[in-house]
Image 1: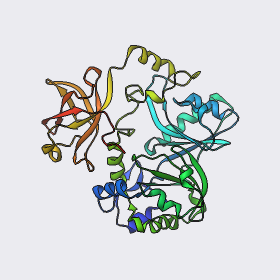
Image 2: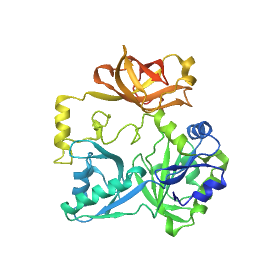
Image 3: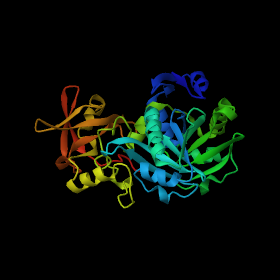
Image 4: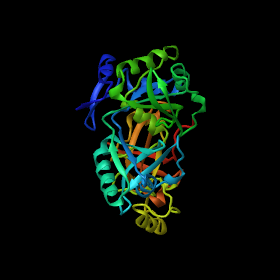
Length: 367
């Protein structure tokens, strides 16, 4: 397994290490529920250095990013980021990603498990497009996410950059722990939060990690692992590639129509997605909440569990958990379009037991 620049810090903190997309990553330290609640109340520090970072530059960089992604890349001003996705010609989702406009180049931040696939796809498209240079900077890039209502207070002690000036999906360049960084504000938890990108080869990575935790002692911040990251994003109805979408799903049925900009000139998959839009999707990704909350702890839906109605299978679960905030079972999944209206009741088979759930449009909690 590959190791991130903070692996030794995780081991020293007693983290449970697992293989996550080929990386040795902390799934939890003190426990998923404890770390989840800390992010919701103060702040947690995540190592997300396993994510992929791909730079796109050249005279046609903007046109290229516009062509290979769904959203309108031409609207990304320097100093801003954009949530988007890439599809194959048939409309199947390759990945969802962030695009950062760094001035003379763009940085595409992709999911760890898709990095090699994405890189090969982007390089292949660039070869025929022309005027574009693609550079994989994943292995040299460290990425820390600090998430939670106290995250700004903690980081502000470590930088001269006025963090209150960084709006949602904006970023600034600055120093934290004597290290030059991109200080970004996007997030995957629904809380106030920041992401710190920097060159790991030019920094004392352990010192950076420890400096942030030391600065957050008054707020009782602590490291958080992949387990809490997953429950936090699910409470907010945020999608996870490989669970809630993959190459067999399209952005319209996955609820990503809002980033699919049909009014721009062209993009890969446009023709196929226009046909789907005209005929209408056959299924929709939506949320579910257990009806009998007394059964919540005994009936937690998991990926792949069937969804039925009157004995007929009408869909399947893509993500599910016991919400630490709500203390009840929640899930997301695909169901036939006619059964996807909010308030409809369906049945999810949880390890052979039929359990009633109500269609509930995410997010499950409001922040």
